[in-house]
Structure formats: structure tokens, C-alpha cells
Amino acid sequence: MKKLISILLAASLLTAGLIGCGESSSESKTITVGASATPHAEILKVAQPILAKEGYTLNIKTYDDYVLPNTATEDGDIDANYFQHKPYLDSFNQKNNTHLVSVAAIHYEPYGIYAGTSSSLTALPDGSKIAVPNDPTNEARALQLLAAQKLFAIRDGAGLSATKNDITSNPHNYDIVEMEAAVIPKSLDSVALAVINGNYAIGAGLKVSQALAVEDKNSDAAKTYANIIAVKKGNENKPAVQALVKALQSQEVKDYITKQYGGAVVPVS
Amino acid sequence: MNHELSAAFSAAMLGEYGNGFATTLYLVVVCSLVSYLIGVPLGVILCVSDQNGIHPNAPLNRILGTVVNIFRSIPFAILLVVALPFTKLLIGTKVGNNAFLVPLTLSAAPFIARMVESSLKEVDRGVIEATQSMGSSNWQIITKVLIPEAKPSLLVGAAISVTTILGYTPLATLVGGGGLGAIAVQYGLYRFQNDIMYTSSILLVILVQILQEAGMKLAGSVDKRAK
Image (cartoon, rainbow over all chains, first blue to last red; front, side):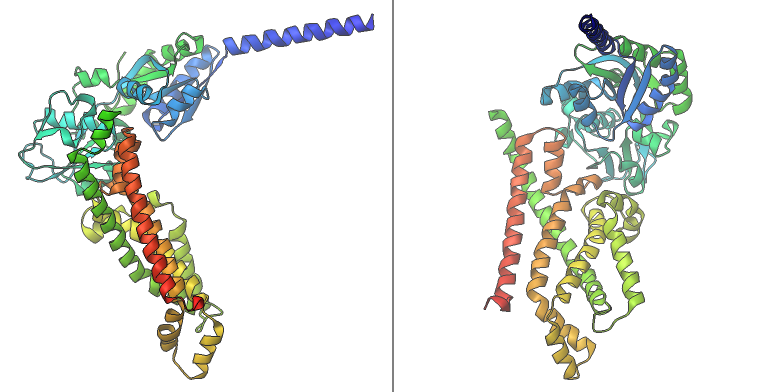
């Protein structure tokens, strides 16, 4: 009799344990998202209470670079990430054999041409230095914005991988200085003009209204470079992920973005 | 693969490697010279004012030692950013190769001071005492005994210091500078063009080997111990 009871007890405990395990892995109420510090992590913080009301715990993990959050998502260390745009994601998947997909677009950060030692786009002395970010998609976007302002011409079709070498005509011989995006805002007194990312402009206390030129809201750039929520392929329809997207696209978050960032960050949905 | 290979060795890239090689050499040579100009006197003072030195001076030694330690503790990328206003004051711009030389030198000089101090402290006490008993001044001891006797060690230290400086040159890309390291970072790390990254890295390794060999050979030719 004792043996029967202990066997039954063990069996029911085991079953309960298995059921418990099954539940937590398919319906986890915790979601960990990797993000850049500004504005992504800040926006996620606003979504935290919204998700809490739905019963979800949102853990935010901040990253300083643009490689680790993707590898962490691929490896399953984090559930999703929020720091990049689709062109970067596609390029990353291609070069690194990862399987990340975009779930939703949340906002875009207009690129701006900011004044350095010169506050005019037309009266620039020949040979002036113009600072652009040195990493691929950001440099391409910066060069396209400058070309759209007619400062020089870029080869047709250079698109998202444009580099200094794709400049076909530069009649005023502007010196394009490729440098670390984060250092550009600190070097405004050493260049005539600077093209700065939304993230770093905010961090440096610059206002979009100060920019000499900005990417148009209806431009291809705005649509292409919207910042997305990315997950590993197969996780798109997980309830926690869908709840995350819903929270980030809610009116509350949209209002926060519009009020907080004064035009430097613009919700897209 | 073939397309990528030809991209790594296209006319445009070959030109870039050439410029990169020259720029890296420029950065290393100028930084080393100026850092030694600052570091040698600093190292001499640190050695001489030490409690076992020929002219002990505890307060001076402690203050100088602390300043050197502070500069050595600051991570280079932070030093670069913090020094930006000073860079602008010194050379008028925060971008470019010369702008990079400022924090590079601020970082290398204390490192070299410690290496020089260490080399000088290795000099045989007996030789120093013999010279002192002959009535020579401290200046004579420094210039005629300490530095000449420490020459092999100083040269080994120089080989280490120069290759360390070389190791930091890729960070020139932070402020729009150039060099082989910057090419490796911009094309290799950022654009995943591995062939360009390997090529520029190999060129850098070759440069390092040349400098290291030259340094060791020079040290060997003046080392009395081996004879």
C-alpha cells in the first residue's frame, strides 16, 4: 500500500511538474527586449506599465552597439530587440546567416544636417569639411541627404551602400570626413556641417528645429528607415510579442514620443 | 568570392592601403617621438626622486606618480573624448589625424614614463655608487651613467611602447583619421568585407614585426651582457 501511494505521489508530482514546465515555455509572461539607450529604451519604459496591466513583465536590456542585440536575439538570450531599421536587419541577416524578422515598425528618427562652423547650406566655402557617420547604412543615408540638398552628386543606384567613393561630382571639393557617429556632435566646432543620427542628436541636446535640413516625413528614407521590433523567425505570433507591439503602437506611447522628443523621433503607425 | 577578392585588390583599394600604410607610419612615428620627449624626463624624475634614487623627494615622487597613474587608468576612448576641447585648443581642430595624435600622445607618454623609470631602476647600484664616490653631480650620473647603462632595457621598452602605440591607431577612425587600422575597421568590421579586413590587418602585422625586429636588433647590438 505504502509503495503504491508513493508511486502515485511521484507520478502526480512529475505530471504537475511537466504541465508546469509546458505552460511557462509556451506562455511566458516575461519578455526581455534589447534596445539602444535613447530613445528606444526610454520608449520601452513607457510601455512597461501598459504591458504590466496585461500581466506581462517587460525586461529592458540596454546595448551600446548594433551587433550584440541581434546575436542575442538569434541565440535566444533575449526575446526581441528594438534599435534598428529593416535595411540594417536584412543586411545583418545576409552577412551573419541569422534568421531575424521584423514584426512591426514603431518610429523613425529624421536625419538632420546640423550647423557646425557654417550655418548655411548654400554659402559654404570650397573645401569645407562635412562630417558623416562612418558605418555603412548611416553613412549612405547621410550622403543621400547631402546629395538631396545638392551639395554633391552620388552615382545612381548607390542606394543604401553608398560610400565616399560613390560621389560622382563634387564641384566645391567638400572634404567628407567619415567618423564615429557618437563623436560627431562633440566635434561641431571643427567641421562646417555635420549629419547626425536622431539618437546622438538627442543625446547631445540638439533640437531638430535647429537642423538646416531634415529628411522629409513622406520620403522613402522615412519609410525605409523606420525602427522596428525584431524577433527570431517563428516568434512573431507569440502573445508576449504581440502585446509588446500593441503597447508600443498605443496612443499613450505615441503621445509620449511626440511630446518628449520635439520632432527628433516620429511615430510611424 | 572572386568578385570580393578583386574588390580587395582593386586600384582604388591599393591606393587606400598605400595611404593607410603611410598614415599609420606617420601616426606611430610622430606619437612615439613626442611621447618620448615627454616620457623620458618624466621617467628620469620618477626614478631619481624615488626613495632609493639618487635624489629622493617623496612629495614630488608621489604627486608625479599619481598624475601618471591617473592618465594610465583612463580608458583610451574616454580620454579621447574628454581631451577634445584640449585638442581643439592645441591644434585648432577635433577631427583628422593630428587631432587623433593628441589623446594618443597623452596616453602614451605616461606609459613610456613608467617604462623608462623601470629601465633606469635596473641599473647596477654598484656602478652608481662608484660614480658618486668619484664626486660626480646628479646631472652627470643621469646623463653619463643611468641612461647609457640602461640603454638595452630602454630599447626593449621602446619596442614594446611603439608596438603598443601602433595597436591603438585603428581608433583614429573615431575622429575621422586614417591608417591601416581604420581601413580594417571601416571595411572589415562595419561592412563585413573580410578580405579587406584581413589584407589591412596582415599589412599591420608586417609593420609591427618590422618595428619589433628593428627594436630588438638595436637592443642586442648595445647589450653588454651578451658579450
